[in-house]
Image (cartoon, rainbow, N blue to C red; front, side):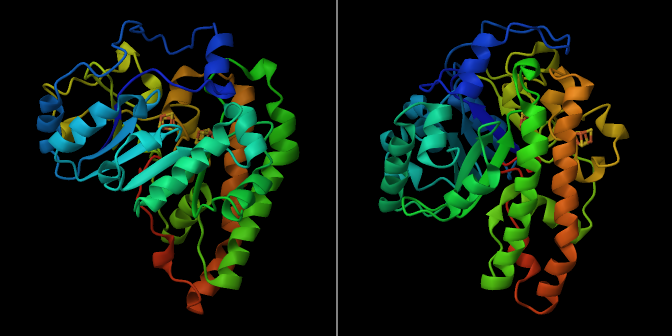
Length: 373
Ligand code: SF4
Ligand code: SF4
């Protein structure tokens, strides 16, 4: 099982799509859930409880999460020293990566670092100076011996040209990434009316995705390289292996959960404080016997459900975008799946010619990449 360990709700950044939205977003969602507004700002349970909880699952992987988890360096060290997990990962904005000693950083299996593309775009979304500081820290951890997987985690919305920005992250002189994931900022806030999502998704994003997928297969042809562009890789893996299960691909609610600062277990970090979805507390619960929660309509009646898996349980439950607005998000999912499916014959041919191998498509599932953006 995978668990996001939420170390704090606080953050040292004020990104447009998170801090900015939280300020403008006054409306309730339609989940009907009671919300706990009094959660401790930082972890207030004994690490021993977490160690005992994890000990029930030999495959327990912990991902530090926030807010910004590196605001809690001492807690990270205490957990890494005191809990026998199969692995540790972290999702961070990267601004404080220099604060954690290399002996801990180098133990991370994966670091997911938020970066939205080139300097101009990253600083536009995340604040001036962010890009340079993050790149400086990434170079530092590499120099200090970090050998794990480093995933650029992009948040994508109207100002993003997906093809241009992913290409830049792969091939740039400052810090080229070999693993990239992106998530659409869509359906998480009551913001559709003040967005330009329809025009952008139909006029820019969907085309960019199709171009990126052709480029991805071109790279296999030219260099024998299967690039770790997670949304494309994950869908291609499923289509190549006939894996159509209709399960949420982030693992949320069935193999990937989150632990709040008070020790309560929730479906995923975005459901922080939603009391109706508390699944127990680490002091009593067995990680292998947690209730499983699945998406409902409209996903369960959708023709793309088997590959998509429902995209996001939080969005499905809270329905912050109405059906018409959310159908635009679903159109991006269909576009992605169809464009990958179109390339499967070309990929199979390359496999048959042994220019690439099916093994090249393998990846650690539920590593924080949702697959369906
Ligand atoms: S495409 Fe949309 S409706 Fe269909 S399963 Fe995915 S999120 Fe649900
Ligand atoms: S996709 Fe949705 S349910 Fe899954 S981890 Fe992200 S916010 Fe949670």
